[in-house]
Length: 190
Ligand SMILES: [Cu+2]
Image (tube, rainbow, N blue to C red; front, side, top):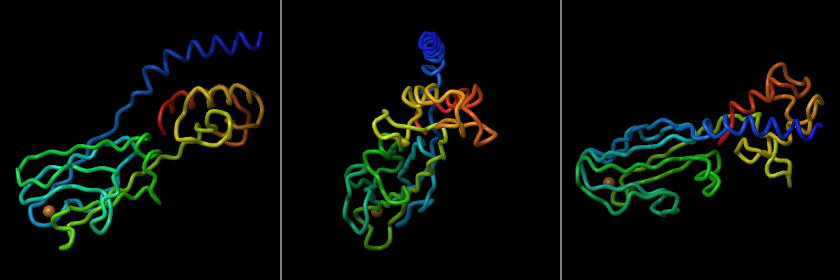
């Protein structure tokens, strides 16, 4: 009986999940020049946001890394002086997983002018994600995504004070429908 019920819940939430997991972030602008500056030079973004660099004067590019050492995380291409050139890059969970950096800080520079201080950085703000209670089940560790494994873990701990009980307020109670609803609301990357 219990397993059938779990299956019914899974089917019901499936439709909800499909519509909520494609949440998109904001787009933030950085000016490339004029002069030897990125403006703003140091920008904090939310996970899932897109940064849009727009060339505004001078011969520049965008390359991730420090001191002229490109680290391969992102790159606009060769330097150009074409005003209005746009380079867009989305910093999502997949990027974060593939290119981890201490503190989620991603320095970058212009290959032509890094010697005269045309350097900048992005910091990716990763939201706290209490619904991310497990990964695929092998390690029982957060993995940056709220997915079916978190849902199964929550259901397995239903009415206990195990993992999942602290997703919704009040904390330290038992896994209940409020935790389930908060987990579904957080579905996807987090
Ligand atoms: Cu430059």
